[in-house]
Length: 377
Image (cartoon, rainbow, N blue to C red; front, top):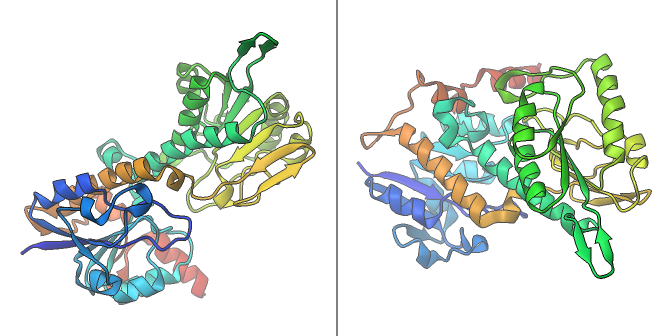
């Protein structure tokens, strides 16, 4: 039996990405899978309907969703889209598992097996499926370019007939995937770069990219590659040491975010007030509330000469390559989900089990189930 996969056009206003690009469609179609894509789904990243030559282009979204065995999205499906999904089918995408929990009740009621790519465990076997990392890398790169556009200074040192311009100093807060890419990008552009993270274990990675590591002598390694929450005493120690480095920076890229939790407040208003005028902060954690107290999502805040920008959905700004990487992540996940021409939801597989939120008409994921029960009590 042919497996029907569909890709709807994203409905989020600021979204340019598409879940599958033509090259991945071509690869999947060779495996006897039928791909249906909504008309115009890839146009914002340069793909016309004609580019999807091995897919069937459908103009009616409800028809598209209603017959698919597997639906692939970038953003969470809306309530309207969920109502149109084929009962008993599979949904895969960024499902934002820690907010708007009523969506998962609706998915369970329609017997949808919903996989959230944010929950794919960060283990070596799942690296090729890790969409959080692929998109974070893009965000780190783009953040430096956004900062250089706003900053009224050159990043590299320049020697001109009028004199020598000193290089800008860039501080990257958080040395995860986004932070390391930001460090590498700022270094390529010629800035003097420092990298800071509460996880001392990343010191070697920061220094391997040519940046100086800001060591606050706190070990805060947590689970899943994320940092644990600091104690009040540790937070004060962090603030005292970091304030000096913040004050000396022309450009700060802040990346400290943990999915499903508010972003840690690292840069206080007092720290901002200690910065030189015309300095810039790009807060990649804005969607979680921001690492800076002054951050406003989607806005540029001017405070005593310092500009604080909290961009939303940064990977979408590099939509073509973001879509390419995400589509490859999905392809690798589908290879796990589709075995010998059949869909197999193997609950014994760690990757399948941990990323599955709803299945068999029930809330499968223990953490989401606990949140739902807590919200209703």
